[in-house]
Image 1: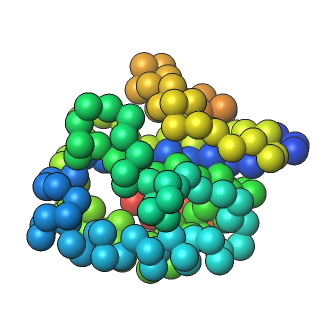
Image 2: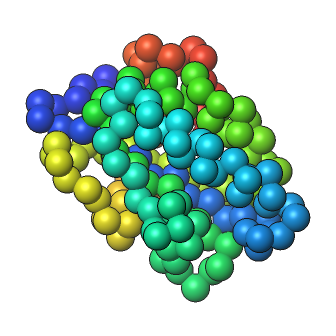
Length: 161
């Protein structure tokens, strides 16, 4: 599927996960200890627009379900290539490669991207609707995951999931 960014849009991404332990527990220390550093790199990265965060500076305390181990990451980037560069060519990749230490395996899609009007900041609820749509209907030109971006500049450098 050829994914083409519509004019006057940015790309939003949602990544969800269920932690293997309470966030202040020893098993999560490496992840929690890296959050501020990785978020600061994101904010300095070319194409970064916005990320969901609470007063704590991240989104780990934004609870959308009754499950205290369920956390989300939601951000907006100017282009899919900008998001790809951050994910796969910064220290973020090193932490991504260790996700099995901190998060339970996924039985279904846990990551989704979609186009938003430039200037729009999606809510967490809006983002979860997009993820549910991807899970129910699969990728489309408007809602997709990494596996749909076959022509991305870093397509060969990343692993899906």
